[in-house]
Image 1 (cartoon, helix red, strand yellow):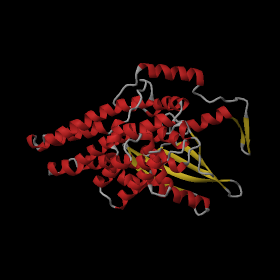
Image 2 (cartoon, rainbow, N blue to C red):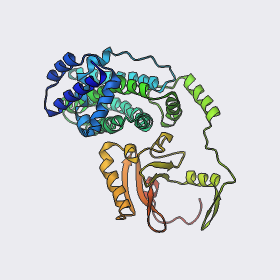
Image 3 (cartoon, helix red, strand yellow):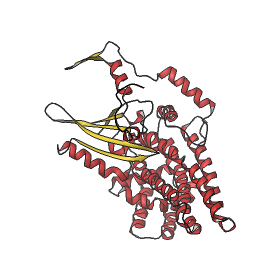
Image 4 (cartoon, rainbow, N blue to C red):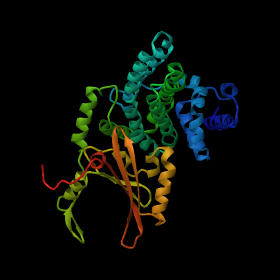
Length: 397
């Protein structure tokens, strides 16, 4: 069967799934009419569904069913071996460690009858603490891999898989909050088991769909940039092999980490003059993180503060701002941008608890002297210290 014919049949199978067909019926039809299929074809099909108007939420809701439907074909598909310095190889190394954690969690649940409740809670709490590291793994995908796939027209991962990441994060949060539930058997069934299953399901989707499609679509230079910026985002459960660090060092020497700045290039403002080196130094010295999105909703700039609140990578430059946020917050982003463009608002702010910090976020409409909209400035800071201030301090200490 030709590739386009496969895509037509599979798209119809997925649509029938959404309309209520059972996985068993779909699997029989799949094996009879399609047979073998590559992971890249599956990724392209999901992208086609998005292009045809199927919402990311619909695809997200059924993507576990899709994975089961394609499991046999995916496991039979060969993927080339990656070098130890390749970002995909490092993602897979992390997955092997994540699998060890989910396996130990499932063993804990399996043996729950022979463990007293307090011991179970203690072991579950220790497991959840270790699993928190998965956030780094997911963030590297969201901030590095997804932007490059978008450049090649693959919007599905950032629209669908990011949503699944946040579902797992929410399951993790709920499992932690409910750790002292009086009925440990119910807790294991309703909180811990769904979390472990979703984490394992995400590994399957990564290794059999996302990574093979990424290897096929991305170019060598893309992987070089991802490798460079991965150290800034960080790794979890693994230490990057020595040759990775050596490669990064060589890249820094050949490419250069710092932007080229013409020290003599001076910008004249109504209130004074400043050169580019000074301006960059000022932005990076501010006790807040700033990100500028232009009037066309493209990320144009972010300050390179040493201790940023949220991860920002250079792959975000030129990225559509809507793709820089998880699907769950997209409606709020749209509302903010619309209110700024219409002139209904000039600012809006939020404050959240994030990784033990109290984060204050302010969005500011940037306008010219005629109040024409130029873009949006996002200003973020850890306001925990400010929040605790009382009285006055007039003297240096």
